[in-house]
Length: 319
Image 1 (cartoon, helix red, strand yellow):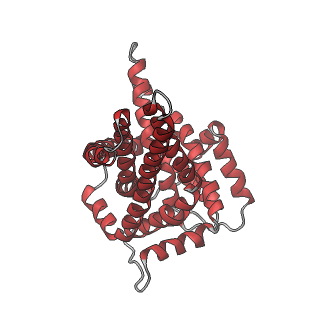
Image 2 (tube, rainbow, N blue to C red):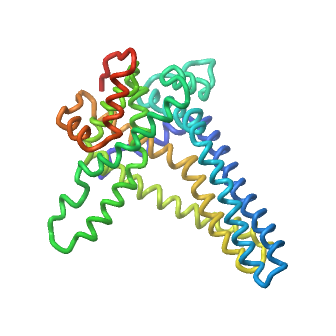
Image 3 (cartoon, rainbow, N blue to C red):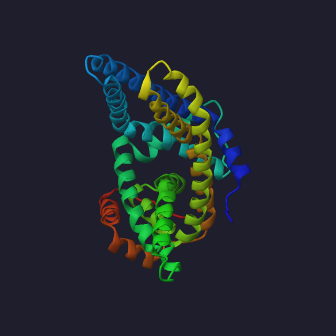
């Protein structure tokens, strides 16, 4: 079935509780901002719409506008969130997976940021690297063939397309895994080590996808459960708004479930997949054939290679 240990993964996350709490604060503040913005927008819209025959429609559009405003702000803050929170958390998870002791007398968050700063320098460097890695993921999905390669039976094209869609969704955390590989190898050339990490992922793609699909199933089941549990308080918050506005409780519940998934469930998936990845590639070297396939299939991968050649330093990268 799957190759990760649920118990060990939970144990690692428990040891990174400062990061879990920090992520919960950040994402639940974002959730609260969504709720307040949508509620304020709905109230303003209803007030303006009271001059017309359909105040409910104005209120709905006001709520949508409020949520959209916060969504844009979160989009622009993604670089900071990646650099200051997610990358630092991954750095500490990598150390724990490898059995390294965390230093005494230094906070976990500060320690994680110190590793990321020493490894990548400025936030914009890490963000640019992350975007290139994300761009290679689609090429990896196509090259490993997905499920379609194993379903040559006529009439099963629709099933194959659906299965490949599930696989694409399951590859959400590849960039975090490669970031962890970057930190673990401690190479001076982050572009080159990312290229190596992607090749190693691709040559072990079927095993990694199998585990990623299982984790995706677990995470979405838990997210749906959180969504159902969140419906009651979300509906209570929006109860004061009349008519069709009550429908926004579903939107708020979705946002709450997203916040819980981002704060708690995603770190679990990242830690589990990273442990599988590190164990799988132990003793392996990047396969030149897979390297050539990615060069031919992905412009982003070629950009990684170009940046690697232009970078200074470059201690050898070992799996």
